[in-house]
Length: 471
Image (cartoon, rainbow, N blue to C red):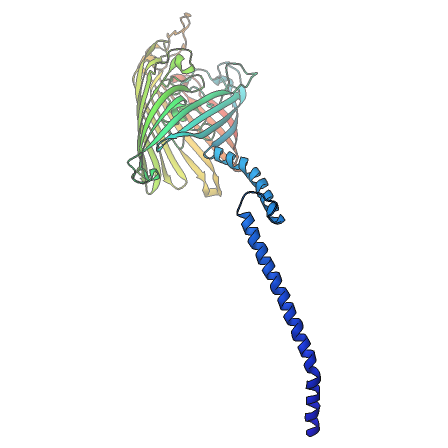
């Protein structure tokens, strides 16, 4: 036992110098690490101080100089992009190209021969904010249109065209010049709001420029766009205004004018509005004649809910003191109309229009159109839709009397030469295939019975297809 104790003491005595050497080395390493940490902290303080200033200095760390150089380069790249983004904020650009092909038999054409015609139309619109006056916001809208092809030529009918997309300038079929279709400025003012103008539930807007009046009057969610829905003009707008000519627009459907609109959205689902517009018709519409605003039109509209499904009713009245009648004489034409659209099921929308002339020598003085649009949800094609519409244009008493002898151009040859003793009736059906988000393909069929009120004339059948690309 004694021998073992002596051995342990000897070993401990020999190990003591070794442990002392290890402790000394460890302390030296810790001092070196502390010095390095202090140096790094000092370097970081110098870096932060250098980066706090945008100025370059030869005394600052090299890394700080490099970081500042990179920041300068990034700002140089971001600067123009930021300015461009700010400049384009609120700018909206839309465009589309629509092409239509139609065929019609010889019995329905003015030429007396079978006709197949194609046309295309391109539309590009720009909408951008244009200054503000206090809390009132301004907007500028412009619309360019080009195209070729006038479509098939019908023998006398009350509908102005079975293809409302047809567009061609006076330059002729060999050219496709673009025109400035619309260019107008709108100032929109919030009314009766508290702290924020965004909380306003009433607005007053003023619009002036070259305008398509149907953008602001006689709208209809199911029947007002010939590029996606019905092609026959009687189903695109109120027939008394467009096909009948009371609107008095230029050859392409546009005219200078101004309008005011009051909007009230205090009740959700029961929003309503009042509009009043004055437009320059006849030769003034294409800036070649008097600029007197002879067409005045007013409209009241209200949103509705039927079983929580949206709809809109619009009632309007107009007077045009320079309307051109079928006998070639300018008179004051007046009338009123209704345009309504209402969802009755989640996938079914019904629509209708009625027009009633109260003054003027016109071809037809009553017009009623109605129809439906059914979405393709039921057969697994929710983006597709089927449209079906019917119309009836009643021959006016004046034209019934004068249709055999009317000679507006004074060439001693009757302009119409038949007895208009009936009402023209139209039917149109289409199926719109939505191929993707940008492309649509729409076969279309039309029938026109008793064309021009001539109940002894053969019915006209028009078949066609429409393709549209939009962006």
